[in-house]
Length: 92
Image 1 (tube, rainbow, N blue to C red):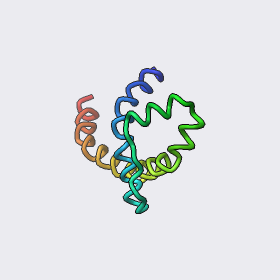
Image 2 (image 1 turned 180 degrees about the vertical axis):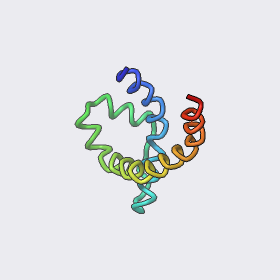
Image 3 (image 1 turned 90 degrees about the vertical axis):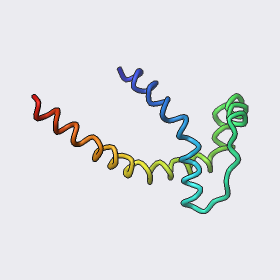
Image 4 (image 1 turned 60 degrees about the vertical axis):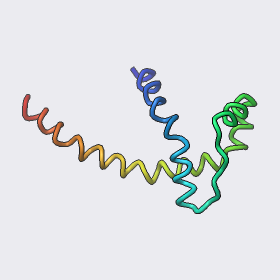
């Protein structure tokens, strides 16, 4: 079950990677880091150490963007799902 959940979450994580990096750059006022899928693949083939050295600042911007956006996203999802959860609880 954990592996299925991990695999399913990847479907959401990968497409949101670049927007969170851009959001982190916006927050810090940093220049846009050139991120292209082909560049990511090429550097990833060279190994984890090279990947993290090349993209460490972009990774930190992505983490910052996620840390700031996650509570807002969570609150919105909670408020959106609250009526449904209340109906489910009452129907039991």
